[in-house]
Image (cartoon, rainbow, N blue to C red; front, side, top):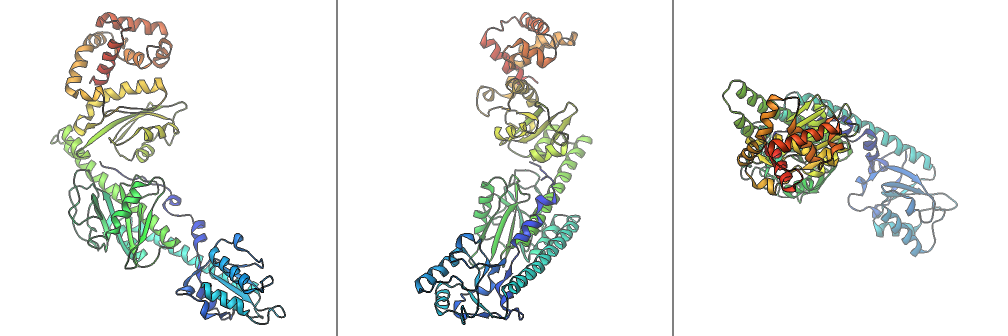
Length: 549
């Protein structure tokens, strides 16, 4: 189905600056290489890669067991005020610090308490692989803390500049289309980028650009599967990319599946045997996972890289969706205006194979807010551009058949009472409007969303047979209404049945006196020659109202 992923604020596209700042760190080697601090490194305590471990802050603590007060990634500073003398206790102290996740221990030589570094501490740090730094007597701990703070501030500014520059470059690239966004994102992340759709694509997947899928065009319908070897797994269709490997790594299929199986704000990452780091996420934080961005690079993703990926993913969704809508809707409108395409053919071309539902929404309680009553809000929430907003207010939309009652119920909190018709092929959507109207009356009476079932008595009767039955059964009422338009008998019957024959509730729903309802229902019984107290008669009339064209 054609769809456009909605726009949202920059705060949703990327992590906030505050969250990025929280993730900023400096490598331990920055402290070690600071000539003004002149710290001495105990080499036997350094495990492989220790000098590249992150330091997020420097903290002074003289507690004998400070582990419960630590958050991890600290450079812990101590002058050994409460350092135990027994080797076993020292070993336990170091083991607890390592378990707490500190990056390194900075020991300050402070005569007469400690003239030199205690040998028990040296051996314990070497045994547990906890980096140990010796701070000279002339260097106060405050100088170490200040040096770390200054270095973190400089790193934060660099990260912020990187994010701002990338955001500006990606925004400029978006003006040139999907491929340019993918290329710019790949450059900024120093890796490869691939935008994939879950088993849907349209005609036109030309080559070009830097990547394997760089020239592919946005999906317009769900009918066509990916060609062999093009996607990460079954049903994954590359839409655009930059330097995309052919084929995608085998691990990518599982990664994308994990993201699609999740809900809410989600993403997944893994490290490949060759050292490549993969990250997959939807094109916007709480998307329906119809389109995912997969990125691979040789270095880990830090806070800035994830923020840049968030911006790039959002712009890929916007640029791709806008192009898809404009091309497909434009072609459909042209065909209709020139008379070269029948409406049923247009519906099938726009939506592709499969079944769809007609949704209808009416105000619930106080009704929707001004924003929630608008086309763009509904388009974003329903994830479809096929939305018609009435002046009522009210709306009608076309969505995939997989749309469930949970999604409809979620709109109730926003002031909408929504019903969904039976799943039908695209060319039969026009026949589903009367059913949705009947279901709306039912939903209003029940004060909850109603979704037609894909199985049941109504689904067992073909649309043509049902429409013929409805036309014959309701013909006397239609004929009378043609001469008495001030007496809407069909609408009154539909509302009365939806309200279980309640006179007062039907009158309130129609905005008339209860005696008017009694009069109209009596007229219905006489014209049709039926007894509405008979439950079988009510059932037949209810289905006729659902099947009526």
